[in-house]
Length: 179
Image (cartoon, rainbow, N blue to C red; front, side):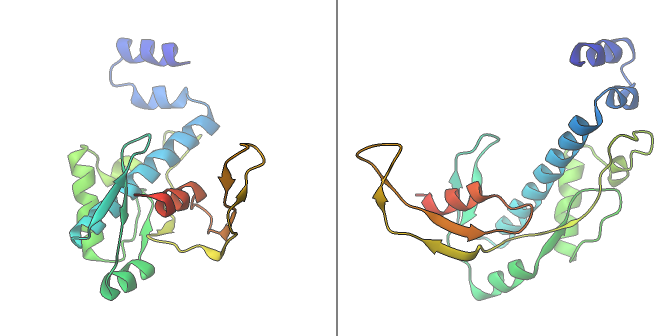
């Protein structure tokens, strides 16, 4: 499939819509979702930086993950209530700051908000749904260290928690184990 898409774009450099239509629905939806997540994370990173928070970088596959070490009450109240939209042609921002920061992100990438309105690509679309800026695990429990069944001579710790849809347990583990 990739070679057909590249061949098309070599022949017709502006045939972006036709190229997107060649990608299977499930794969295109996954790619759109991944890009929405990237933009969401970039927006949240900039919001945290706007507050001047001390952020700790933890290495990740697509670049460092940034975690705050401490929040003052003002920032905690703001971030707990903050729900940011996923990128789409129609989005409602909670405040002027987040809208301004998102506009800057798009401008840096040469993207217009209208670019997310892909009427000609029917197999996938950008839908703006709100996502919480920060989440706290529910029903969090930690069991004492015990011998590890898989790695003799080592210890394991069992964690139990609930996270809302769209949140990842791996991020919680990274946050709990960061230096």
